[in-house]
Length: 252
Ligand code: FPP
Image 1 (cartoon, rainbow, N blue to C red):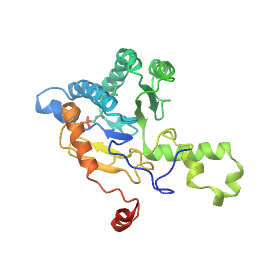
Image 2: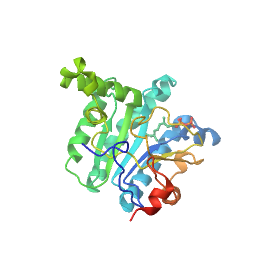
Image 3: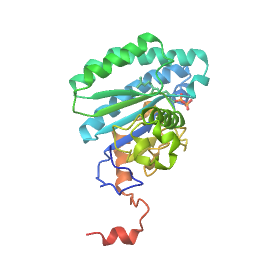
């Protein structure tokens, strides 16, 4: 069990320990260049590579990327199918390199609707990198924050049926152990590219006290320089976690 920002005040470091990113703007990046939207997703994978590398160099512990939301099934069938193929191809192509760099890869979300081949590749990639001690890279796929909270409630009650007759005993700590990001501290920094300013059902529980950074860059244009700008902004934030500025200034 990891500390919760609503139960205790965490220690803050200049480099965020955990960064969560909504990689938005792939479609618009492509449309601007008279290319099919799917070309933007292909270029988006290159940006993933750059950001993974930059996070490793900067000493970030956890990087969590929103690759496919539970609502993205609403997209045109050909775009969904391209994203699935891209996911398969990226896993096949990148896992060796990630493993060489000591990255520990996890995929979170409801993986059950994915084709068996993709589910197998995910399992193999996770097994292959499970003993690595470098960057913890998590890809959220068919993930939704509300789905996560609901699945955690169901899993908790399955593990502890006594709580159904005594719901007053349910607390944050008991529930958060069943969320799919239970292995990671809550994100310090959230980044959304593409100019929109919303959370879009990503990590709705975990973002309670996360600093929110919005960039107008489209995701395929994002890289080490843009990440550094986000870090610079992050360092200017006063993270109060419910306290006043005076209380923070008086801290020894
Ligand atoms: C949002 O841009 C992006 C997505 C829904 C997919 C993100 C996928 C990738 C970056 C590539 C695959 C990644 C991995 C890790 C395999 P959008 O399509 O909503 O862009 P728009 O807002 O301009 O339309």
